[in-house]
Length: 97
Image (cartoon, rainbow, N blue to C red):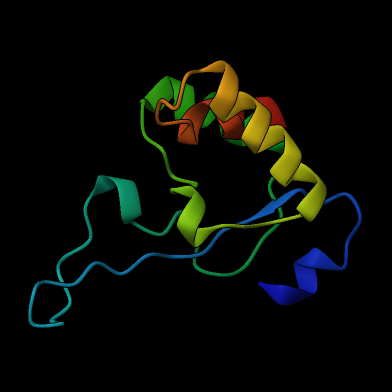
């Protein structure tokens, strides 16, 4: 993930999320966390947003598993404030795309 952050055009970096049970055992992938690609790739934001909206699945993930630039944090805080503290995952990824 880290090499992508050195590219100035990259706004968000996400990763595969393996879910585990209470004992730390891996759970089978579900639709929302099935890897989209077999290798690391760059995806143009608007294309990813369109796919997410068309399939109604947040494949980017929640903010706790995403790397993004510090300047985007200001945008996240503003959106969170404007939306009154609602869950902002997909709304943010759409705006950044």
